Image (cartoon, rainbow, N blue to C red; front, side):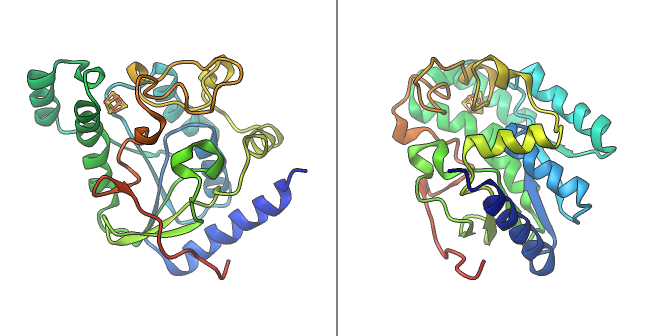
Length: 239
Ligand code: SF4
């Protein structure tokens, strides 16, 4: 049975807790379905939480167009962080444009340059950051807590949708007429960079189309890792 209403109430409580005690706070949006739920709650609720996205330079056109769709829908601009041109050039010289297919290390280095380093810049000066991660998305997220302490960046990290199912996400988006990335209608439940994401087949796991050539245990881009490991600490009991 769906816990949609309970999950939504908890998410609103978490967001209010953040605005009461953790400002300045930022929301890192991948522009995917989960993140559009949080975008809608933040912008319609006029919460004082900044929203940014990471333009890796390798995103689908449909994903990039979500920035304009957010502006049209809510009259709000979100910040866009790009990787350093020098670092990208150096990577291409060493590994080639698509060197991430050659090894897990080369893939992680690309993610570090195009995602992790821009994320560090985006989080500078914030007390907390927010993500749209859910427990049911992947084996690597099974232990996800609503609140963690991100030791890599030294700030609190909130996952207000940790308990949500995919059905909850779509119920929210449809009920509230929230715009979403059209790739979700074409077999992409999880959307990353274009060369590293493909549509999944019926019965495959949600993230089967992400870095499909790697083992499930390595499938994180580094945004949610500390020293190469997933770290879950300080669960928030009072919420
Ligand atoms: S997802 Fe692929 S293209 Fe995007 S940053 Fe990671 S390795 Fe590079």
